[in-house]
Image (cartoon, rainbow, N blue to C red; front, side, top):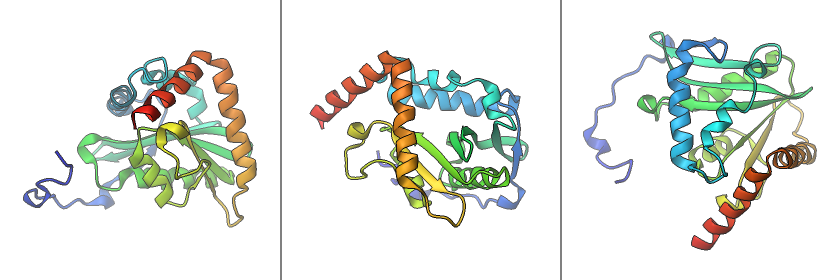
Length: 218
């Protein structure tokens, strides 16, 4: 069934976005837990064991203090005191933040919430003195790829390639009026992936196998 099916029969309630509130918290804030649980389910539902481990392992890959000032930030978007979207960043290098955990509650989709979260994380990165941001997303999150392309992020891959062939989709964005040094951030992206795969050889082998299998089936 198409997501667009029967849309004309659905009445969308008017939403007062002015009542929404951004708050910076720690990753263990109780208000964040429903979002993180849903994100974990979504990762596992989309990726299964494609990468040789439960995709939800990604959520536990980094220490919590990576997402707490001054190293990083953990953001919630609240409506009536309830978290409806969120995201985070950690320090990638001295001038760059890496955005992570961008998410919107399944009950509040199609309201532009993820876009608002990304914009706020970009703004907070600027306020902290960073000059660019970087992020990655996976081959089975086409809506994330569309969002980043639509909001001025530069792809660090060839957009015409099949998603499974690209694998890990890297993006970067300048946070100043200066143009993005694409060659530099692409080099850093490649180095980061190489280091990650060296530390997680099972992940690398599974990723290669997944690209081969999916590519043959497409």
